[in-house]
Length: 444
Image (cartoon, rainbow, N blue to C red):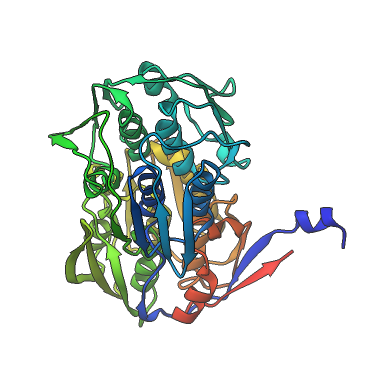
């Protein structure tokens, strides 16, 4: 076989219908927190030790970027890292562009972090990342004095040019986005004066929590988060909880598959990320939190869930930002529920790794479900899932969501283009198979 033919091969999933999910499971570490542990640990004075690091392609892209900028990082070894911080102003300009693969979090947060570092650097990514919008980060950073070049469509590659010091700003986010908020706060670390970000709805607050864990003062008043530039970070120990976004596939799977009973262990239940729990409960899921505790400033719990008869709901708009990454899986729950489920106010789903509203609608329709996309959401009529071939368009959450749909499908489901599942959930197939999903990888 020639090299070009190998490159053209794609990893697909083949799901046999039926099955149930059982047992105790700890899914991989939280991706958002894994990214931030590398970023802040690198900028800290002293050593940071990390447990539970997600060894997926996205977070490894962040790790490799900081190694290219002169940070010594030991590991990962079974989720353990030791980061020897270089201080807030100790990064070195990399010799080559930083390739961030498929990771939008890496690109947006690093754009902010590096904007005031006094170096010139280029950020690149794969074809999917290179199509994702960066204007929402570039515009406010430019107001702070950053000099950032991009394509005419404000996409990667991004060129961050040398600027010695940024100026803090007071910025109202046009739409709720944890990535934009975090990019501005990270830029504010090296800016003159105060940087404040006001958000129209709550978004995940891992950056604020972790900054405080590293000893950097962050002030919150209502919907405004502020910090003053010029401080220092101090190395610390971080225990990363299991990722609620990865746990969601098993929460939905256990809810829809008759005879299922699972406990998801050590799951992060940060109140800015727990929308999926609230939504599943509103749909009638048999779900409870047990052994609630706090680990390293992040709330954690074990989640017990069993199969139940779900019913369609109007998803409350205030929960949308708290479950933005979990909606592809929740759409599968809606397809298996009795009645109609409607989502509004989720236009951000159209600019993720894929247009998740359109892609999920097309896939559900192919499986025999009435799913009508709208500009900012979707209307799903619960029904009987059939089988067929669906496209994931290289989006990891789409691939895993349709995999879980196989638990209630009448016929086999083939999911195309699933290699990017490794960006967030390495080992998904073996973990899901052990839990009871009838799944196998097929290369063609």
